[in-house]
Image (cartoon, rainbow, N blue to C red):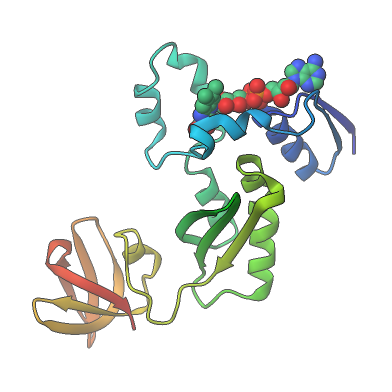
Length: 212
Ligand SMILES: Cc1cc2nc3c(=O)[nH]c(=O)nc-3n(C[C@H](O)[C@H](O)[C@H](O)COP(=O)(O)OP(=O)(O)OC[C@H]3O[C@@H](n4cnc5c(N)ncnc54)[C@H](O)[C@@H]3O)c2cc1C
């Protein structure tokens, strides 16, 4: 274990401190302002855009000048890194939403693991995610709620057809509900099995979908 001193508690300094601490080092941050991450409070018009759901190439294509400067940062901590971090724990991020009320920030995350999420998973996920979320929001007013998807969750996003592969599903096609076991999706069609037979259903034909 080493003693690490980080000068400057902005976004970069806090991330460096978290990384060093997660490797087992003893870390102190020296910040000249009265609180850490002060600039983050004015970013994104007070809401700070945490990341972007597009890939690294899309982000770089939208940088106005000298995008090469960002190469190492973007490829070291990519927009999908939160998702990767959870996947490394065997969890899938199903849904994330941020609500604000009178200065309080509430982050709701829906996580899934095949076979079910244990209390230990939820505690571990809080431990891993909370420091990252504190970088983006004021830690005093932040609450993070992590839950698992309900038994008959309504599918809201195409990604969920992959996340929930192996689960029973009900699909509303025209006026009829059909049941089956979800096998996945290629982005255009959803694959289910019914009585051992595979069936491909175009995404555009699915009016509603629920876990069964
Ligand atoms: C108006 C605006 C909106 C933005 N919106 C977004 C957004 O929505 N999403 C997003 O991701 N980014 C946004 N950004 C960019 C984001 O704020 C910066 O990329 C980020 O803050 C850079 O982090 P940093 O740690 O490199 O620098 P800084 O945040 O500037 O941190 C440097 C820290 O070092 C401290 N420091 C400096 N010298 C010393 C010293 N000698 N001793 C001790 N401490 C010292 C400073 O006080 C400061 O806290 C926005 C920026 C602006 C200006």
